[in-house]
Length: 439
Image 1: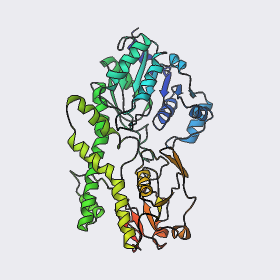
Image 2 (image 1 turned 90 degrees about the vertical axis):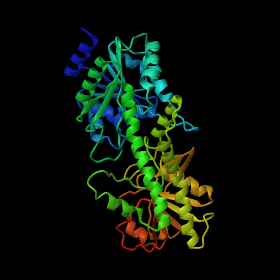
Image 3 (image 1 turned 45 degrees about the horizontal axis):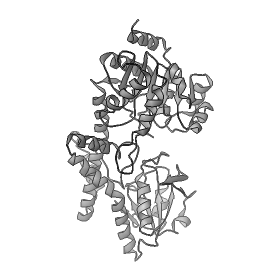
Image 4 (image 1 turned 180 degrees about the vertical axis):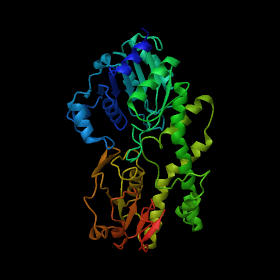
């Protein structure tokens, strides 16, 4: 029986043993979905704390249901380990590790490389490896393939299958989760594409769309997030222009989105955050230079978005100036450090860059975030306020809304008698606007 037929038989009988390398925001929800659909799953992670928490049924990811994790662990459908020798037991392993930027804004693929090397040492004939981490086009075939072949002694396409299927995780999204979001698959060879697509169809409820190669799937993922980066850059630039022209950019966008075709609403803010949108365009522009090509439109939007934290503090300084107070020495309270509303994720959060810029200008900065009691930024821990009330707010010279959390009493904030710089237009329905200025 061929490898393809053996794997198809295991998929249909649900005897395919699944593996997930990296148990973070992408990997743990994927591992849970695999186990929920009847496939025994092993999660691999180098952080022993995560391994121990999973094996204890303790959830640490917002998009995973606590009860689901406990049930899957107690029933033996899901377990975690830091011992990569167990890779020899799995038939399918997805690599879901971070792909950050280094200090020079260039791709740091060390996590992917290290994971591939660890997997290669134990890779068996007849298994499948799929990279889910966002990366530059070419990573799967130029980086992973030779590492896996050299480390295992096996031949891709003959002894094992290799593919790329980009993660599409949106923390806090109440509609689309890992299970029901459409999946894109690109693989090395048609047999690999067929089998990998069949695996995802068996463990996810969303549609699976197969493309002709891993590079197409890799570029597709970059396009998704670069599209958002460019359009957010456009509205951020228009927000700066509209402020000079005394025009409300938020009202402009609300009017534009009444058009039922040809327009999608994007909104300005103090910068970009999260695990993808601020990073992915750098991957593409870095790879493009290999071909002597400069992504001028993309790089322009990146420059605009990167400047927004600085622009936010400049605007805040003007608000303070009107009260005859300088940035240096003024007490500023940031409302929210999460990178988006109603989640506890502060990866690449623009609020932290805003905080850094305030501190650089000599301001005294505190923050309140109902989802994040403390946070770590550039090696330093910051403790958030436990609560806010009018008396607490009145200790500050300025309040800046940097995350649009829905569980904050913005009416109370507006009525505290302190200038408010609303960078997210979250206070648009507040009646008392005497102290409110909007980005």
